[in-house]
Length: 123
Length: 107
Image (cartoon, rainbow over all chains, first blue to last red; front, side):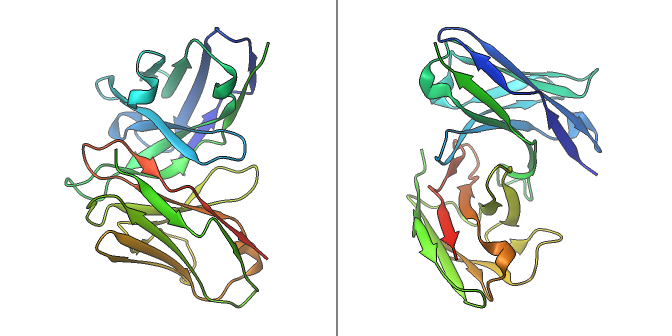
């Protein structure tokens, strides 16, 4: 059974950095991309970026370029998402998700999700 | 970026009703669209991918279809467990992933 287990809730001050982990099990970590998606309170879903655990390659949404860093530790089957220069608008639930592709002609849909990590940013 | 316009934002229905939710893409995404169900306090759950392929374990009352850039999620006979928020997501290659704004399905 594929599982993604995220680290616990965080309370951060504006201007600081948060690091969230996502430990996977039930499949070979390097076979699939890990994506990060966030959801502000009462709002929709927003894709932030992805990591290819096989080679560490990343791709980020333009909105988060320069503030987000996504990494993968293959020795621990864990992906990480760092978000820096936090502001109140970054208060949200952050999810990691397992990306699956049904065709070489497409990108990925998100077949499995972590339970989410609430990040609260407040002075 | 590809914009996904989802409608309606809220939908009120009864158990047993047939309901339809629509997503329209701002440009062609072929069949690269997924639908998710999200309940309060929970992560989204994949229902359908490739516009019309039912994810394993998802009840057959859920179905998806495509007509050009318009995609539809249909629930044939609403069950109490179906009252949730639904999102579409496009995954066209070489394009940032984007989601619809969501449809809250209320009793």
